[in-house]
Image (cartoon, rainbow, N blue to C red; front, side, top):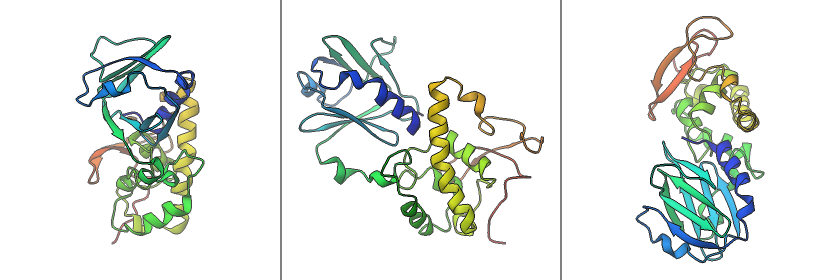
Length: 245
């Protein structure tokens, strides 16, 4: 599943299509995608894992789900969910969710929850965490209403950086750890972005999919944790479990 930084990269890659008119639309989406034909793209935006194509009167939201992908000025063998063809170029989206947004985006999205946004508000994130004291921190980090754009890779790496066990309860974290968690969620997203642009992201993984803790040199635990049941990779020695006794 593409995480927030990957959507930022996509947004940067399609900037040349702003102001361009769509001459043909194809795809197997069940929506009336032909309404896009002849329309001019006025902007591209993102909110976490949502990629937003902006037109004068509506927005197209692309969510890549678990297996979605895209191609710019080239095609895959698979059938596209949505293909936007321009006079010079095309954008193809595969295995994704396509949705029309008719409302004002400011009514739909809380920009302050987007970890990579200029409007990111760490104080608001802290207040939201206070309201879910019994939640496991592995679930809290994946909560898109708190940490918009954070996915499983970022979750695992942030918890390793902050030395927090994924099954720790949010309400049991010391105040200093809560602040550290919020800070590192944003820091790692921008590290992720930098490394992905340089094609070296995987080389920098310290925990995600790893078998040995680089700090303690003992085996990592691999476990599906929390209500979201996503894979966690963690060290039981250096990542502290904060929980009720």
